[in-house]
Image (cartoon, rainbow, N blue to C red; front, side):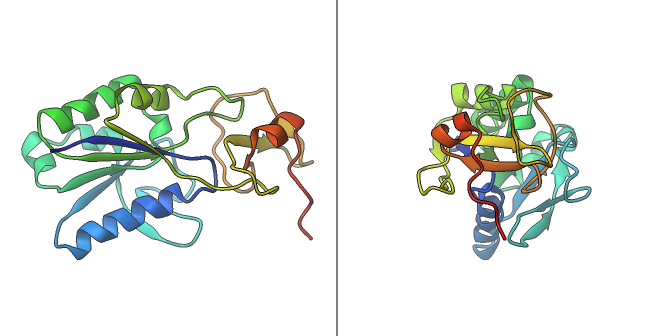
Length: 191
């Protein structure tokens, strides 16, 4: 039975590495999984999904995925969507149709909330409709579970205002526990 999965975690929790490993597991078993991401994500180049540990794989953009026919989608054993927080609620609704009507499993990876602690629209829709919701955990610098995405500036000040979407990685974001996010404490500076 096909299901819609939402696997979420903070920045640096290995969501993308997990997505790429799941794709590889399908390949090892002689099945093909389609990698998809929203076109807004250009950090690692066009039509590529890349993890911080060096794993990469080609992908298509979500709007290209939506243009595929039912027959084209059904040839895949699984659809894997990275950066799913950038999907619209309508995109998530489309994914439920792929699962329910075409019986193709969809695994979405993304952030639950932004740097202010507010849900992304795509994540909110996934939390409301996914059959399976799983947290990919990582830790704050203090050892507690990281649950917040802290955005920081060039002076290592934690930001709490600004545009919801500012693309970046370790140069702009870090996962923190709630207490250190609230305090704006990025931890000891690396030397």
